Amino acid sequence: MHNVYVRFCACLLVTLSLFSGSAQGSVNGLGIMKQFEFDSIDGGKINLGEFDGNPILITNTASNCGFTKQYNELQKLHDDFSDAGLVVLAVPSEDFFQEFSENQKVKEFCEVNFSLTIPMTTITSVKGRKAHPLYKWLASEHNFRPAWNFNKILFNGAGDFVGSFGAFTSPNSKKIRTKIKELLQK
Image 1 (cartoon, rainbow, N blue to C red):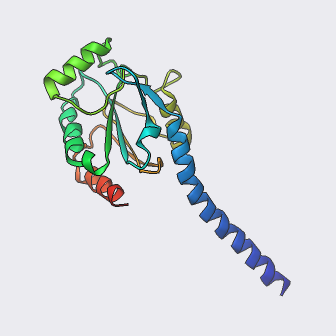
Image 2: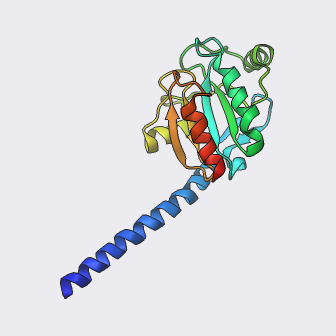
Image 3: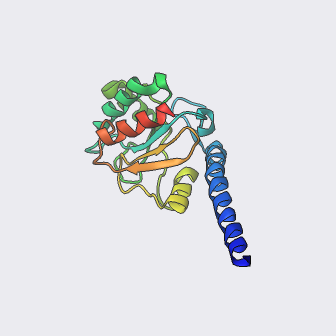
């Protein structure tokens, strides 16, 4: 009888820790997102905590990359899903040596060539010691480090990391669009 009681208590503790862990994950997700702030290419700040309740797709970008045409696809995602709550954020980075050295050139390039209206940060490091705190957190907590330009990361409305997609995965791929639709329905 004593062994049954011990097993029951152990199972109960494991079950409670699983439920509290998943609930805590969401709280930590929101809390962690509020800690991440970027300088906006338009001036001011972009605090990820402002998007509480909204899924966020963040992409490290570069103006002179073979994947730069994905700006059109990021804009299409924004056009298709922003009214439903999706936030699409571009993070220009020179880490792979394919970005202009001046924010104004990046902004003009994106406006003239892609008519971008998605939020965009200033040129930001996404890897190594100088990486933005969000990317350092992604590396340490989720083992995610951008391998190239146009790597995409997706967060749910609670601020939890959902997944990452490489440069070869189109922002408008069925895989990404399906995941975004699922997040928007929750």
